[in-house]
Image (cartoon, rainbow, N blue to C red; front, top):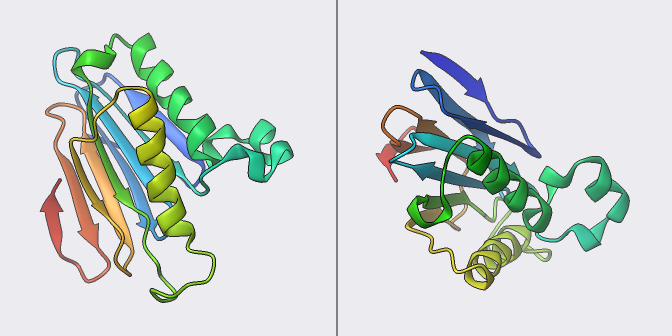
Length: 160
């Protein structure tokens, strides 16, 4: 089994059944997890901010930093490996308010809203999600079976 770490502002896609994609310590960031069970292709994006218009220079340097530029890259990479949009299972996790629920900037909530809006505009349904609250999450995706697990900072793990 090969563990492939998806860093902050990063994405990975795979069709290798022995791969497990994992991203650690999602706070206000969001992990977008996609999986095509027919092609056995999966991918994961760990984005930080909702919209590339917040910083055009950073968006050009690292489009995976933003939801609106990172999500299309994730889907295209999966398509290149044989996935099809109509078969894709989509899950999201993260978007927490780590400082407190009255966090002035509310980046976590803005990220949740952005990802939902992007998928809605593109006729993509989010199958499951674990978002909001005030704790970090670690997310993994097994390419062999599409099993997605979310582990909280308190050590509780559950299948998403």
